[in-house]
Image 1 (cartoon, helix red, strand yellow):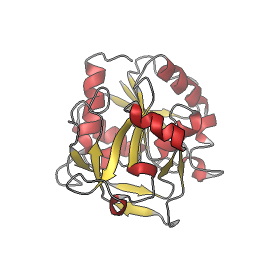
Image 2 (cartoon, rainbow, N blue to C red):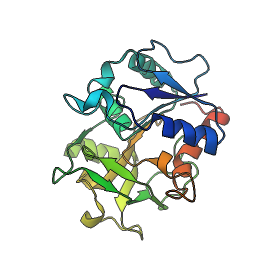
Image 3 (spheres, rainbow, N blue to C red):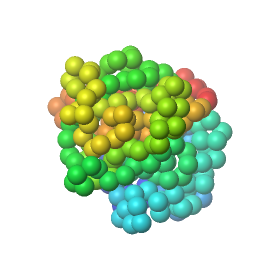
Image 4 (cartoon, one colour):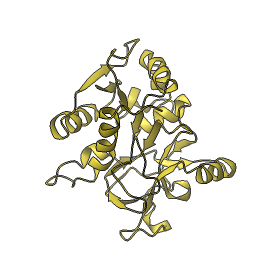
Length: 234
């Protein structure tokens, strides 16, 4: 079972559940932020997009103190796969489950776009359906999506293969013009050292149907589902 966490202000929680349940055929349930524990049969956790707690203080900061996050951290520490999308990525960075931080977009404007992303790592549990160098197209919609990391951290992420997705041109080339928010090194998604926690700003749940946004999102969500069904463990 995949647990989709609901925070006050989440607005992509039902979209995420729909993508898993109706499109990919997975058992997925909504879990309220005040719950102290995840359901006993939880095999993966997803923190969805939105504006948890209205993004007061800074995006994801207050959600980190929700009761459910203690359970999510225990789940991740035990090797369970945890995926954070957009605001969920921000929450995972605030919680310390992922390195770095998400800041205001360069130009200070909210960005709604459909960028291309180059797959830098193709491995379970999040990108096993991809190949290295494959270009995906996923939508974004955020005001605080600029990934930041100091030079030492960025060097470590690069050398350890922890940058999973990078904004790119349609042909796969990385350039400043393909960077929609000012993220350092065009980073769009990263994972933790163990490989069981990943965050990305683009929304795979909005790209799982051919008639609405394409199906590239199934590469990410389907990879997670494959890992759950195959009994993947970190």
